[in-house]
Image (cartoon, rainbow, N blue to C red):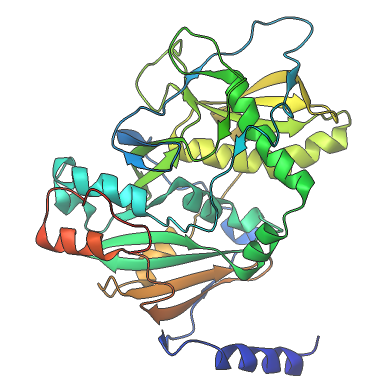
Length: 385
């Protein structure tokens, strides 16, 4: 495609932009991996501030009721032989992906605890509040070759909030998700059911329903370089026999992957999948990832533990990240003003500026509560408010 066609397409896109788009000076962040060959920036070991749970109806609870306990099978020569297809689709309740939750659950936790933070609510001024998954995307961007992303950023009372926006390509892929991929997604959750118990010392019960609405989330604070972070991430389980019972050091991440028999398979695994596994666990401070390797029939034949800090030697990531770029770009304090950061593989990160719908993501119940310094969130806030 020549430049004139690119220009015509850009003009058509610009013509379709909503009126609430605001002009912004040209600004971009290159993502060539060669530009990030320096030492990894300082990352403070995450410390857990608290947690919350989401139940089978995706309702918020400010406690650990959804936490599960790591309960691996006895070690033997036969392998675990978990049938990851068992229960699909009859005992499967997937989360409604049409509901855009944004940061709402984390904001509910934050309203309940902002006055209890070390340093008080003032600590949040200048901090970044987001989900662990969003940070993972930023951390791995220079090495991602397939999936683009969009992140909306707003600054409110000094705090920078980052919330993912589903790209048109991602939405199209989700709506056209083939049956095989839907089944593979189920297998990942089914593996967790085989490996986790509801109580310490009890055994897993894989006969129940797999309901992906249920989640246990840890809320942590950390620092990347000079940038304070407060973020949350879903945790698969805790290990009652871990050397340290202090979270997140006792948490375990569970993953599945297909069996690999050739060196080329392992090279691809280390280069792509292990990179994301490492980033997810490293950011949250989870020390180990336990992977179940499945055969073509969907049975887990072997388990392997990947210590997070040893994974770093395989992935060899050297990246400064996009957070400082966002911090320096989003300077105006206005919860209705959104800077939309967009990226596609092979391109730099670009930014556009918008006001209100459809990109504004901080709910009014949160903005009003923080403005009035209310002690807690309303009992039943709607994600669509």
